[in-house]
Image (cartoon, rainbow, N blue to C red; front, side):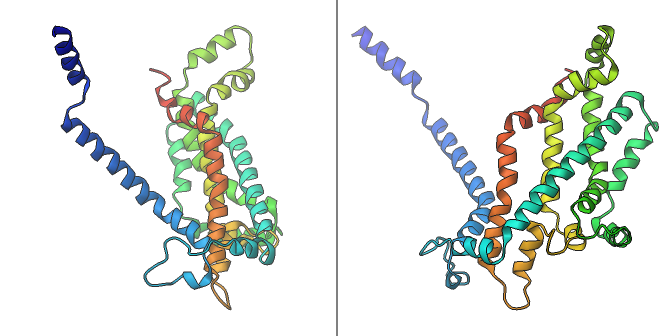
Length: 291
């Protein structure tokens, strides 16, 4: 009898009280609502890309297509040749990320380690990024037209690098300042050159932080419309230019194809973030390295 009472009391002790279950249920319900709220635009765009034209503007709205179709994607790649714009975006965004990081890492390291330019140089660099793109796109166009760089891949990469280097330097500057100099000094004592310590020690340890900057550069370049719209033509147009062209057409607006372009345009950034999630987490937690 005593054992049965002990079992009953122990089972009651392990059973969570009703108030705790209610709080937990409310918490998960709130999280689910937030997820649905933030994913709703993406899900609606995906739904629109799979609809027939007759379902675009029905009242009440057709949230789930009555009949799924891939005609919009077929039209996008076959009739509108969106594959060229997709390849252009991948190429330009990747090259800009590499070029910008290659030029920004030495600058950020020099400012962080040797205080080049004093304390005002870092602020002056980021102040150049505060200029809106619309303020510099016309000078860019006039200069690039004089240099025959309009409608060229290297012209676009140069334009994006000039625009995003201040941002990359400012981001990397904080990571280099937080890096423990004692680790680098130990390698110097062991006979490694300073360049060797940067390549073999500093950059590998800061790989997660550098990946965060690379991801931001890739996404910013991929999503840019204004610079690409001014400096590209049919041969070098990007996915954003293609997307805007399907919505602003002299004949009709093809909303299904535009929605398909948005869905295809979201895939590379998502893959970039998912495949590099390990480095992304390391980079976001790099600020606690000194502690």
